[in-house]
Length: 211
Image 1 (cartoon, one colour):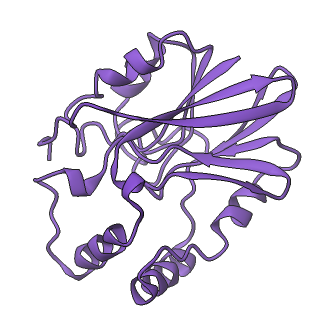
Image 2: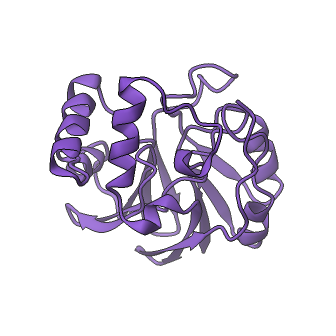
């Protein structure tokens, strides 16, 4: 089984449309998981033309007809159990993490992987988004995977970096490794209960300017 993974598309909020390269890259997959921050139902429609879509709600999805999506979903694919979640946590956790990241000059995620793993009981893989950062490591006996985001603010000439919070976020983004700045999707290969993941960068520039 091949499963497409998409996160943080932000269509209608920042991107005017879903990049047409994404359906091309995911052609032939058996299922698509979207890890939240779709921000427009058209994303479900377009991905649904490729394969069945399972999506969770991101912190930008409370409006736009997406507030009904669940925060967490357990997906069974063959013998594999895959947890799908966006990854946002309370401000009491995220704000200190952001502040420490700025001081350290590198991402300080304050137990992000462990927190995501604890959202599910017995799983072989946890798919997440939110951080706009690729993740590929094992946590608590499960693969933790994010391909990174489709929308990357530093690739957007129209993104508003004004204000203290936005400037701090820009400093955080600049501390990330080079691959974190490239829009990407992912593919999971499932054999029995084993799950392998790979990240696929988008080669075409984002069409920006919706905001």
